[in-house]
Image (tube, rainbow over all chains, first blue to last red; front, side, top):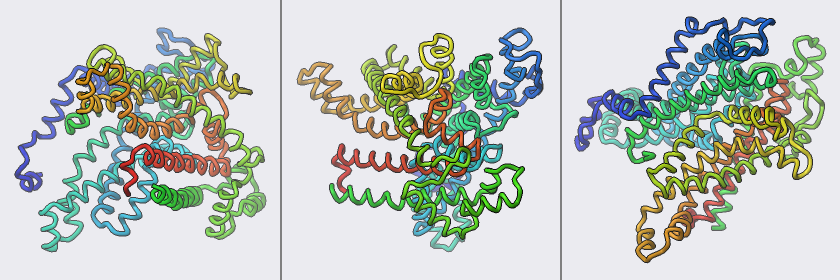
Length: 294
Length: 311
């Protein structure tokens, strides 16, 4: 990173990313609360087998549609499965997709954006055209349309959410790359004859990393919502594998049985998305005060 | 201005073409044989061969593409594999329900969101502002299908005030059926529009001409509505375009929750039945609606904001 600060001597010394993150996350009560929620859910997801009172898949015909009780805190569903255990295991899917998909999208989107921004010309025209087209679609609709063609399942969901997010990353990466390419030291490197892959890896990528990482963090919440929506529509995580979205779907099919699967799983989605939104907003505000919502 | 309009219209042609190319290749490249999917694992090789021939799967790719594009332009998407009805007919039956839901939700969202935003902006950092902020945080976090399910359980199932499913017949009955689903989508809309109105209005209220208006002794009411909100309308209109498409995508899950007819429900059912012709038709219709809404929004900006007319 020393390369960047050498190249811009006019800028005041920047606080390190870690310091910034620390002050951002632990300064306001709302953000601390959000971080705590995330920590709890990560803990639950990591230790699901130890925390869940029952096997989320084990069915029992004699205890169907039970209301909440001491034995089953959130009752049971139409197959006699323990709802709380299913929600606990469901957190694994949500967090996994929430973290993996934005990461994949960041990698693919940045690659496309760098290609378009660095090489320009026909490459840029083609990539930009497709990206503009995809950007016209809300992420949810794009994900639904691709999943409609692809079907559900773990890898398909990762793929679908990734594609839905790629255009946003590509646009940011393209703009950042074009700006970075005009930096004097990059122009100098080109003039000296440094090979293109070396320039991209050593000069372009470090320059576009910060906004891409922020964008990826902002989209964790959206990815969790997307996975829940797709699973709810039956084109995400496939039953009997539990996910918050398909627990609500099962709950709606059994709406006269017990409302508790819907209430519990929905509350979990809402809490996690709220927490990631709050943290994402705090990080964005810290890095770019001009967009602050205050 | 006329030239800009025509250029923008011409620009939509390659976009539509690109959409068709993407949909076509996505449906063809993917693993899985539509004929096998339609007939199931028990199909004999002879049955498969006949259906493949009927579906045109043995034709060269370019011919399939030409047939597909011709189908789109003549509004012929083939027949549903599960019930044998024309896909165009299914779409024509379902589309009005989706449009109705989207429009009613948008109207409710704007009617609730704009006053909320004005209230937040005029009581900045006071109780109403915090209230609107909390409301919008929840609105952004709660999944619409969850909210819909809660409303359905409370007001339709337990209180019996609203129907549990269906789209209704006749104007009044349809409005009655669309109310809860639209309210669900409007809640999320109101959160977004409220926040947007607050931000845009605060920005305008900080401008010099607002100070001048106040200095001239204009009433606060006049300052806010005549000078403030009027100038904040442009960013709000921009937001409404985005919001319209978001509402449309939200309608897919909401139609499923309230079990009402619509393009989203048609598409989701087709997916579970692997009804390729209906999936293809539904995807194309959604995609063309998106392109059309974007085009219309662009034209609206050109009309609303003279600065856009330049190039």
